[in-house]
Each structure stands twice: as structure tokens, then as C-alpha cells.
Image (cartoon, rainbow, N blue to C red; front, top):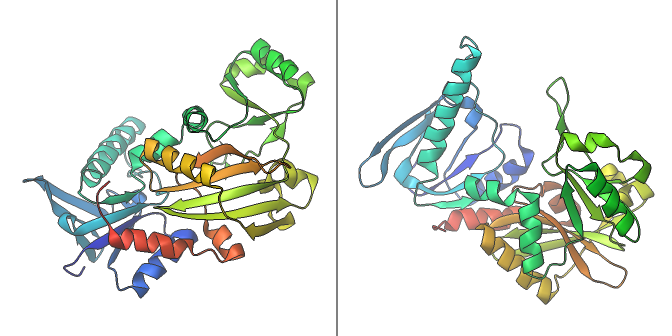
Length: 321
């Protein structure tokens, strides 16, 4: 690694979205040290000694980055830590916990810019907390109930004048083969609200009448917004149901929404976020959620919005937050 400020990119080897940013950095002749946490500790070696800050390096194969040279870090959905198969289950769990605390503990303490800091990603991923802050900063989220009480869910559905939707609180589901699957938003059937609600927390929201939705990608102080128009009923409920039925249009962000988003990002300490909004027939923007590590590659592909360029520029500039 050249003796100059470098960008750490922590992601999987097959992450085509991260590839877009790496390509931009390469064109700018910015050194990049890319690795996945799944390679630690088997193939990645950390050496860090506390001497007026952490001094040492991270090595992956023939490549190495000195900790003092890390100007910024793109924390882009790296894998879970993978321990040696010869270990017992208890030993693997212990080793994984030690590896996470050691590697990430050293890296997040470096004097560099994180996009985003793993701790801030974790905080901002709590959807009820998102909704609280969104309400406080004037982004007008829908009426929402979080409950594991069947009777509370039934009362909420009766109180809402119109449809109610169900949304997951934490990502999708993982099937018995370990394959992650998305769980789209669905309209609640009042007759289907049985006592199984008691088995875990559930999120119910009022249906907000919408003309279209907006995916807003924020990179530093740059805003990239695209309208998403659904071409069928399934995509109108949740556009992830049918990407082929969607059309897109670049749009400006209203000033009041921009101010609210800036405040929300500041509250969570984020420099990147992918936000979803409903836009009503009257033109009102209503906040749905923010994904602090959300996908954006497909939006760039279909709209031409220069998101990878903005991310590369942010990472190249570096700074502490």
C-alpha cells in the first residue's frame, strides 16, 4: 500500500454496489484496502499496539494498510466473522465475539471518517427510534403501533379509518437453508390477527394514500432523490414486489423535508442514508424509514444519479466525525 492516505472498504467480495465506489476511487488513484470480516482471523491479520493511539496494520494476503494511513472507511455490509470449523460451538462463539471486539474495536477508534460508523448504523437501524426522531423533526411518519399484544393490534386496526399495513421491524427472514429472504409490506387482514402476535414484536401502520414513493439517497451534504412509480397493484403496496413494474423520475427535495432529513442524519451521526418516503396525491412527503446502509446501485443505474461519484469524493476527502 502506498505511503499515503487510504480508504478501507469493508464488504463482501461479490458486492457489485461497492465495486462502483472502488472503481471511482481507482480512477482518482486513491489507495483502497478492501476486505471482508469473514476473512478474519483466518486470512486477515491485525497487529495493533496502543502508543498514543493504535499503531500497527491490517494485512490481507500480500496487501497491507498501516492504521495511521486510514483516512476513511466504507462499512458496506461485511459478512459475519467466520471461525475455524474444527472449533466446538462454544469456542466458535467465544472466538467470534473476541474477533469482532478486537478488529472493529481498533478500527472504529481510528481518527478517520466512517461511512457509516458501525455503531451509528446499529443505532439508526432501530425503526421505532427512527420514527420517533422523524416525528420530532417534522417528517410526518404514519401512525404506528408496535406491540406483541393481539388485542392492542385489533384495537389499532379498528381505530384507523382505512387500511393498515404490516412491516417488519428488522430486515427480512432467513429460511431453514440459511438463505435470507425479503419480507415485503402487506395489507393487514383484520380477521387474520390471531394470538400468534404474542410470539414477537410487530409493527402496524396506517396506510398513507400515495401517488408515488421517493427513494432519497443522502451522501454527506448531497441529496439524490428519485420518484418511484408503481405499474401494478402489488408494486403499489410495496415496490420491492415487482421491480420490472417500476418507473423512475429524478425529483427535487422540498426545503422542509431537506431540513428534517439533515436533522435526522445529525441526530444519528450518519453521513450516508437511504430514505423512503410516500408522496400523497396532495404532494405531501411522509417519512417511512431510513436504511443507514441501504442499497443504491440500482437507483444509480436506472436514473444516472452520480451516487458512486459522491461517495468516492466523500471517502477521498476523509475527516473525522
